[in-house]
Length: 439
Image (spheres, rainbow, N blue to C red):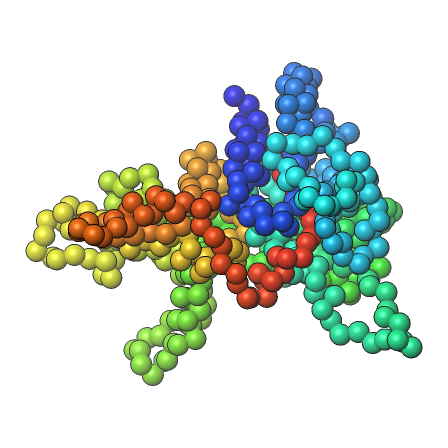
């Protein structure tokens, strides 16, 4: 099978369509498209058939490449042809009246909301992601929504009772590397930036070279470069735990981030002989070590236990450490298996990991170079029960928690109302076009 097709099918059947990626509460308007250059003659028919089948591929009028103009060609295409489903309540920006006929829908496209206009509209953001990136779409949309509202929430001065015009957001979003550019695993520009990139003669003459660094140079060429917000999302964009890079750590959830935050807040140097520095605390991982090949905590883990061991801060990831050791008088293999069983019972459900909220966790996992790693990421971020119960023996007149758990599947559980700023902002809408680029 063509490896490119295989990877695109992974995307289509996982984060592009899964309800736990999109968390569709009426605001999921992100469109995913695969961006390719012109295929070689022997591949042309296969690509055409795939494009006709899924309606989610864009073939640019250039040869396939990474650093020879493809990124500029993509943003130029987007400025002319990118459309997304309309919002129920549009934001007051200059491009809201630009509309177009809805294209043929891809199987993973979000459907327009009841009561929304029929014509599609321009996206608020256009983003590019590598095809070895796993993106949690609702998390991405939530972060971008905050940026869209940042300017609207700033105090304004009225002139004779007339509010000033609302300026279109100027945002450059991604993972900031060395304080110079957003990493190529994923970055995005707000719509006004995309429109300018497509029209700028200065940008058109600067399209060859490392694509992620080039985009940063384009941003600095903007007439209002000083007003562009560079927004970096460091904590929630990282490499796969087994990648072995400096950006690798375990699959991260809000509950573990909160625990680390509390440890840093409560650290008292007077109470410990050698307190960890803030830098060492932030760089520590319970799952992997930079430059060291990953080794599971036990050779006899089940598939789901092996995925649990890749979750940052999980009891399973700490099996074998002093905090998860059993009676030293036991045979080592028996003690290890007991530690594994105990760690599995102590794992968190999704509700606990997300602290009873819908959003707030991982946005993107990068450097997924093996199919097995993709499946692990899918199970870690999209799988798992909402709640986890200890397997206690049933007694007369008592409901078995395990049986009760089966009745409370995610579709049957009513989501609680949250009062945090981010959850409030899910009631308003933003949109984005996300492309995956074959590298």
